[in-house]
Image 1 (cartoon, helix red, strand yellow):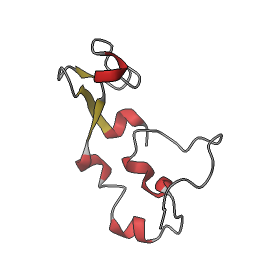
Image 2 (spheres, rainbow, N blue to C red):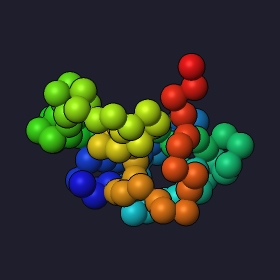
Image 3 (cartoon, rainbow, N blue to C red):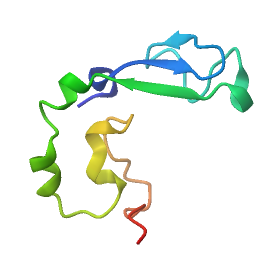
Image 4 (spheres, rainbow, N blue to C red):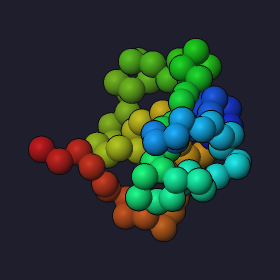
Length: 88
């Protein structure tokens, strides 16, 4: 699922300005990197059609990638370390 299919919009935590996923990258352009953290707002009704407890239970992977459908990325990057997260 592409990011634009699962994310409704992004909003700045400081100024509350809203953006589409293709307008900005990482931080609010008005508030800057120190204050302009963006919150990702998801379309949970759409996501739950493909991602539910059954799907999650069937996944053996023990990293944050098991939650790909609710991460603000389209696919798992190949250049990252394969096992991130799931610290006991």
